[in-house]
Amino acid sequence: MTWKQVFTSSIGRKVTMGLTGIFLITFLVVHVGINACIWANDGGEMFNKAAHFMGSMVVIRIIEVGLFLFIFIHIIQGLALEISNRGKRGIGYAVNYGNRGSKWYSRSMGLIGTLILLFLILHWTNFWIPSRFTGVTDSLGIPLTKTYNGTEMHDLYSLMKITFAELWVVIVYVLGCISLAFHLAHGFQSAFRSIGVHNGRYNALLTSIGYGFSIIVPLAFAMMPVSFYLGWIS
Amino acid sequence: MEHYTMNLTLKVWRQKNQNDKGRFETYKVSDISSEMSFLEMFDVLNERLIHEGADPIAFDHDCREGICGMCSMYIDGKPHGPWQQNTTCQLHMRAFKDGDTITVEPWRAKAFPVIKDLVTDRTAFDRIIQAGGFISVNTGNAVDANSLPIDKHKADEAFAAAACIGCGACVAACKNSSALLFVGAKISHLALLPQGEPERKTRVMDMITQMDKEGFGACTSTGACEATCPKGISITNIARLNKEYLMAGLTADQ
Image (tube, rainbow over all chains, first blue to last red; front, side):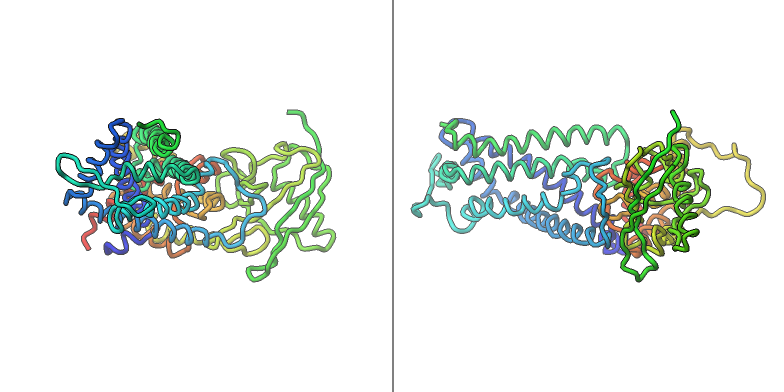
């Protein structure tokens, strides 16, 4: 049994999905924590400093490479599994099995994941690509920078403010967060089952934590564009 | 419950052989007793078809006691019909009422091709068992049952997993046509007992390799299989299978 065989069997592919999924869950904790600095009500100073630290720290930049690697493995493997699984039935049923024993979102992980990917493309275009490559500017192309304690850094706080002044962007972000919530509601607990957690007490615990996580984290993310749009942050 | 009779409309999948395209045909059956089993209702219909000179509907059955795993039939959107933890042969007509229309389809999975009408080829399961679902024992007299102490909780769990009758309802219900509830039950049953220890690692690897070769899908942990299983096999067995597979994969010598 080679490593390749271990990770390309139907179970191995699910283990890959589970492990990358759990890594992405831990990334969400970091992401939501840093972004929550926008609510410090200090004109974005704390948030800009935190974002600058994440962007300039070499360790974080190395992890970022891993993050993108894992995101793409998760996406490609997920889509490949979805296509392969859909091809296993052949002729479909005249009467559908429906919701017996399963939730609609657990059966729609491929679809929900694709919605999240579409959202991510917008999200990267809005923030990640400007901050890493094209430069953080306002709509007129004037660079957005702030200087704190003599260090000049991107003013991502103002970029958020400008981006979330548009209602359609806010709506798309909220929809993206709702998709993430349903993806996590199944994905969190399912990821641990995929890597073999079968003890009854842990399964119950992970299911509860999973539901809590899938509500709290996407809700916190969704409140960010909403807070900017409604002017809750000074 | 009060006995009653009913008239029903059946929409049944008819397919001459593996190469035939197949189609639904509608049959009316009358004076069906609420005490009959679902298969007896098919017997009544088939006797009539034979009298009329028509081809009777082919369906799998053997013990008709809910223990052999031969009966199948996807009835009104659920393998083995509307009752919980029940096989088609033990489904009684009191589950239906006068005037009902019942749709009956074969298991649908590429790994279970239709042989004729409602009969599917489930030998893929046999090949998975042949790949590793066995233990090595010395021939001769049976050893004393008490010579090998087994934790009561583990014995119970192994027994619950061993209750799988291999009917394939899990595959029929799963959106991915995955066989993991079946394989999970078979792996768990032996992994929980000391008798399963010698082949523990090769068993899980060989059975999964065979399962993939047969063309079953992967698991999405939706829980649909567990809800339709006539023997109430728990989805926990799939997670245990995943652990067994990972441990075997990570610690394999080569």
